[in-house]
Length: 463
Ligand code: AMP
Ligand code: ZN
Image 1: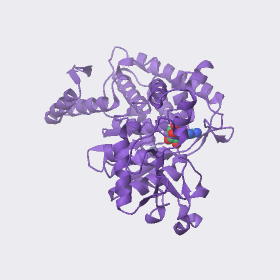
Image 2: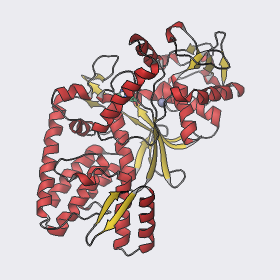
Image 3: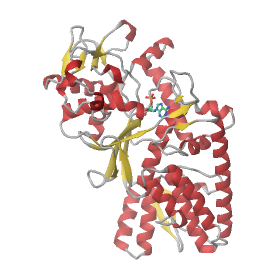
Image 4: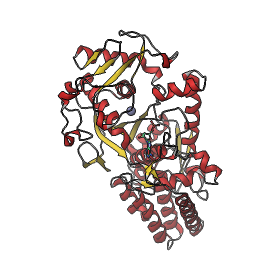
């Protein structure tokens, strides 16, 4: 698979650094309200990215945090008269429900910022010791950006003639700030009245961590000093990801993320969909208008991730029509199988073009087009050939995370990684490569799945 990398501005081959597992981090939701479908554009595309890797046989380790401790969660929990934990737990639950409806695979690890205060304090201590951070008179701590020569590379601040020397007396206290105010940013915020009960003890007095630091500390905890890929929406490039690179590379040494994957925004009437602008749609808003989460998912992957996507309700009607058309063609293909059963496969048959699009900088609109082209080609097939084509269709739909009601559910409930292993095993068995086949059977069993072979295929059951 090839994917554009924001830092080098080039497409790069996606390969695990350790040769085994692709380890990646996504900045998670700020749990102070329902996520809007702009947020979900980013989470759904990250999900297609992961599914593509797993369908291609690469194991993944997906870490996505919960931003449950920042200016916004504190402000709104206090407004609601709830503890920060209770307030953010309720919105986290809503987020999980929406992710499930959108068929987003849950991350393997989902750390919460509140639960990782000691790791954040340790990182600040390290940065102070090395001269990259300093405490101010009020007990706050700031990162000295002039101490990190690489500052600004990701967001190309050099093109704006950044003079790091000039930043020395400017400081940013808020979690979010604009490009015009490049400044030393806050790592630890001294306790303030408006924080209420939300403060912790530290060597600099009572306070709480800044938002940017949280991701760096959780990444160090779960992915170490260097890892494969870091992702988020484009709004995070500056200052959030720029600040993460600075903190992590100073505290840990070496290169932080090997690859940066940023998704463009979902727009409404030409502007970014955002909670603060009040122009957002949630899944619940759209359900009230009669649209399903699967229709939303289809519409969200209908444009390339590097292009902005203007959201309209008519794009959801278009998604509904497309899904109905796909389901009809798939049912026809199943009928054309005659008495044959669906064959598991390790390739994509008529859907090879769609698969290649996905692997070519995650070209989801190209892949959806390829599914329709494949179905036209497959419509001429019968018997075993139709059965093989249907298996190819199921495989590409699993990679896209699309479920069609007419396609048997049993294949879609199996995790993509497991399905990919089982398909590879079947291909090895068919090629009489017994050693690989046995080894993959053991691997499946360790992951909790049993395989029963038949004449023309296999059955997978959870142990
Ligand atoms: P937040 O909950 O604000 O922390 O954002 C969660 C994720 O959604 C981040 O990766 C953001 O960059 C991303 N995001 C926010 N707004 C949009 C939007 N309108 N379109 C696409 N992604 C977005
Ligand atoms: Zn982050």
